[in-house]
Image (cartoon, rainbow, N blue to C red; front, side):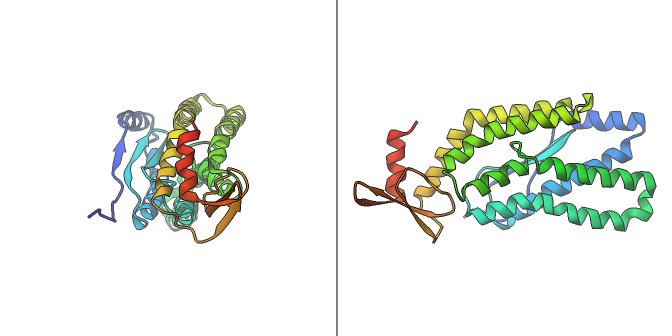
Length: 251
């Protein structure tokens, strides 16, 4: 029997130790601890919701510039669970803000200002529609209420590239190059594998649609948050038959 509670394992990239060593050498160790505390709070907030809903968690990967929760079944749960999973990270920054007010007397003026800056920066960055940030996943889920799910997944690629380009243009610093490069590689990886993710989602739908609300289509649109039905040559086709047909005709 599969364990429901699966607390995320933290896996740190070797460069994290080098980063801490450099911060210690230049007198920024306290600031690095503050930044990593905020980043991990954000990711473990995702992790807590993932545990509650029984997601298949792989790990939390920690880098010098951020961290990411890796789950294998995002998109295969009911959409409201995916929404809560995505929103858990951004909403956790309210708790960080209140916790910062509590710590303010012990942090001091400089450290509290840095804490506030990092908290705001991590929140804003994660809300950008750049894959694999929370903003892109939130956009995907919202678009799926009105647009075909495959089209939604395709739209994420140009939107992510455009947003990353604008983000790099307005915030360019030498110290941010690693962030830009990592996000670009993640977009490239998504663009190379998004159809595999789509097929995996279709296979999950074959096991049974979890949605009670139904919608009837006269085209080949497949809306994620509904039980889809199709009118084909005067005959009513259910979602399962439609998906099986797509494996034969779609690339």
